[in-house]
Amino acid sequence: MTCVTARPAGKIDLVDPQEVELVRSAQAGDVSALGTLLARHQAGMRAVALSVLGFGPDAEDAVQDAALTAVRRIGTLRDPAAAGPWLRAVVRNACRLRLRAARRVVPVADPRPPADPATPERILEDHVSRDWIGHAIDRLSPALRQVVLLRHFSDVTSYDQIAAACELPVGTVRSRLNQARAKLSEALLATADEAYDDTAARNAASAREATDTLTAARRGAFATVVADRWSPAMRMTSGQGYRGGVDLAVRGMDLDLAHGVRQKLVHAVTSRDCTVWEMEMISPPDDPHHCPPALVWLMSHREGRVDRLRLFFPAVSAGRTAGASAG
Image: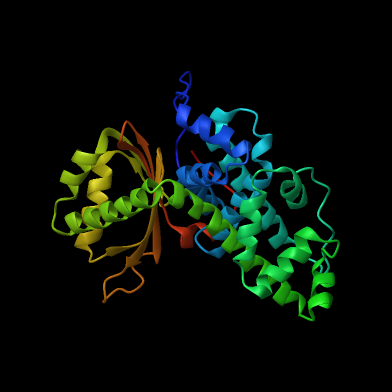
C-alpha cells in the first residue's frame, strides 16, 4: 500500500525544472538544495515506509536512513528528473533491510561497512558539503559525537570495538548511533526550512487543512469540503477492502461520526503531489474497541486537487505479511 503518484499508462510526468536544478545543485554539494529536495518528497517517502513497515519507529528510522543515504549517493542519480522515484526506492530498500534484519538473529558484532566510494570520509575530503557535515556533527552531544566519529571516521567501526573503546554496553552504542542518525537527518531537513521558508509553512498549512476538514465533518459539512478540494473523479481505497469514489468517502465519514467515532490529527506532511495525514482514532466511550487506534490518509494530488485517497490502518496492516504494497 503506497501513495499513488504514477500517471496512467502512456502518459509521462512533465519535467519540473526547479527540481532538476535542485538535484544538480545537491550533486554539486549544496546541502540546502538536498534538504529542500528531501522536504519536497518527504510525504512520498513517509508513505512508502508506512506501507511497508506500518506505523511506528521503524518507519521513522527508515526515512531517516534514506535521508542520510541521499547525502552519500545523490551523485549516483543519473536522471535529475527522477529524484522522486529514486528517493522512494531508497526508502523501500531501507525498509527491506529492516525486515530482513528482524527475521534473523543479529550477532552482537557487526562487520565493517563495505567499501563505498561515497563514504562519509570521501565526502569530507572531496565534497562541497563537508562543511555542513562537520557543523552537523559538532552540534551533536559529546556522547553521540564520539560514537559517530568512531563509526564513520576511524578504523574502529564495529559495535564491539566502539563499545570497548568507550567502555559502554553494545546496546548503548547502537542506541546512541540511532539517536545521532535521527539528529543528522533532522538537521539535513532543517536546511530546507532555513533556505526555503515555504517548506515549514506548507506542512503547517496542511495540518490546518486536516483540522479544518475534521471540524467541517463534525458539523455535517464534509461533502462540501470534498467538493471544494477534491477531484470529482477521485478514487479511494481502504485497508478494510473498500473501493470507490467521492460518495464512498463521504458515506464512510458520515457513518463513522454517526457511530461516535472521532479522528484527531497527529501529524501532517505534504509535498507537491502527495500528502500524509496521520490520525488518532477515538472510539465511542461505550465501545472502546470499535475501531483501530490509528488511521493514515495517503493522498495524491493532480492540478491542486486530491485525486487518490488510500486509508491505511497501521495496526491492522502490522498483522499481515510485511512488504506487500498496492498502487
